[in-house]
Amino acid sequence: MQKVNLTQHFLIAMPAMSDPNFAKSLTYVCEHNDQGALGVVINRPIDMNLQTLLEQVDITPEIGDFKAVAVHFGGPVQVDRGFVLHTPLGAWQSTLAVTPEIGLTTSKDILQAVARGEGPRQMLVTLGYAGWAPGQLEHELAQNAWLTVEATPEIIFALAAEARLPAAMSLLGVDYAKLSDVAGHA
Image (tube, rainbow, N blue to C red; front, top):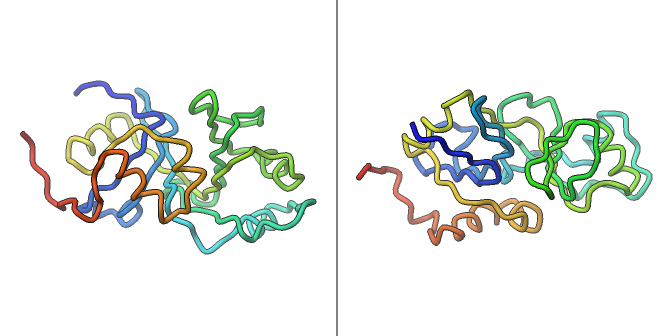
């Protein structure tokens, strides 16, 4: 199978996606290599806000409140753990550098900084992540489970959750509503 690196790409679930974790999802791939792939779903806010999450990890905000900041379902792996996709990269204790500007941080120090008003300029907070074993994502791509397109930070950080999937589709020049749930191979 051909080697492909989808780091810094969006995975757009095809309409036939039967896995409820990913149906109508937009996933940002943070790492893709020989060991597999890791990403976070970016268009699924859950019934929790950042204020509640901070309280659950014993962090008291020093500046305002964070009730208006949604927490998202990032994927079905480690759903009890927080992941912060952010820009700029910063120097947090446990950060995966996705690009020179974007990082994925799992350490509590980033949430403490946010509560002090010293956090990253832009962020998306998730519980859980999406993970693929070596070759699994490539197999799913061959099965027409996903469309891919290079990601843009504006879609992740500047748009409302419900606008992210259509915006990613527009990067391909495709209307999601017009996609067929069947695909073929030429």
